[in-house]
Length: 566
Image 1 (spheres, helix red, strand yellow):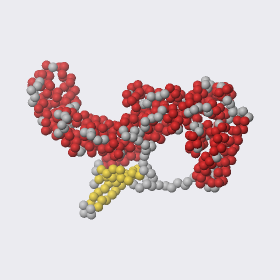
Image 2 (cartoon, helix red, strand yellow):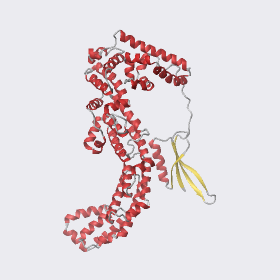
Image 3 (tube, one colour):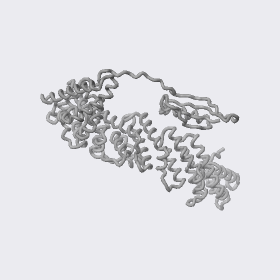
Image 4 (cartoon, helix red, strand yellow):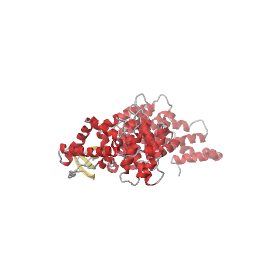
């Protein structure tokens, strides 16, 4: 009889086997953990009983959780009217994001953002003159919109053309009659105070900001000019709120683009370094506090230019929350994406991921919700326990002992019950291998006491790496068995018990073996405990302990650690 755990990733998907075990408790616990993680739609546990006569299995479902079946939902019919119907609609966040995707190539060639395109007459004229870019953008958005709204593509394209003509006409008319402010000439604070009560203050101030950063040669120069405007904003009141709200828009668009972030933070050697730079920028105060106490974080975080530090200090406050959130969302997208953080260096990838986890967790709440951070690192951890990554991580030429230490480190740095279990399976396979056993029994580089000490250290580390008892106890038991064989061949316990040395010294050595300090718990520690008990019964041992009270504390602690206290 055994138990099988099946999962469905989405409702209606086929059932796939996740675990088969003879342990009913483990099967039920695994099913509950998988549902708690929230990454599957349903899970079921079945009991499989083999009939010797028919040679067939009979199956009975003992647990079923989640939405297993798919219920088709009626697709809501989109409104027949397009989402954007007035020129003002084009200035919303979602509209700017759509414009950025549709005109991404043209904007990169012209070193501009959607915000600037909507507020600069010169860029509008340049886009209209190109013809092809604008026409292709309209076609790309009209086809899916027409399908969703049951309209013809040509009809919807005429609607968008009319909307664009109205928006262009409005901007050019305001430019010709001098309605757009010149913040460099008037002063940004004065312009913000003057327009604070105007219903069109976002549009008008945006035109002034776009004109002010237009002469910039690159993205860094634009950010520097935006920081100058932020420094020049009114100190309080409606004017300050309006001014900083406008500055946020182009700043967020620049930092969400790869060229913009690269120009500000410098070119990183890989995705891991790039994410570290973005994390330090968006969570400056939390990362700086970690760097002061964690050398591992200090080692991973790249240096920051004066401009990046200036921007980071602005992002640490309450004024640019949208910008900080945009960077945080980009970090999460990259973490949950398929790209390796450090291609070609798996060990460094674990160190980078650990530093990022510490930094983003410390900044959670202000930068990103803690639940989203944990979900992202759970998804990234899944990549660390795949066969390809583990093979690249272990590499070639390592001893079995070194490979186990590396796998323990990997297990410590992954999160999620399923990922921990997978890492534990790699560890269990290596500890149970004949290669490891031969190395420990006949290792050419270590004496028997040295090999026992190595096994004891592995035994303790396995218990601390975050595995559940069902996973780490068999591994510890195997380490204890190997340690017992090493001790038996070397006859270490007998040698210590009969050594020509003071009784207290021999007692301390035996107690350290029995306590799991210098030998793994198991047959070796049990034999050492037995020999230690024999020494305790000797009158000479008690006499020596009574004559050396300064050593009694050490012996007493070892007795408790070995579980020999009455």
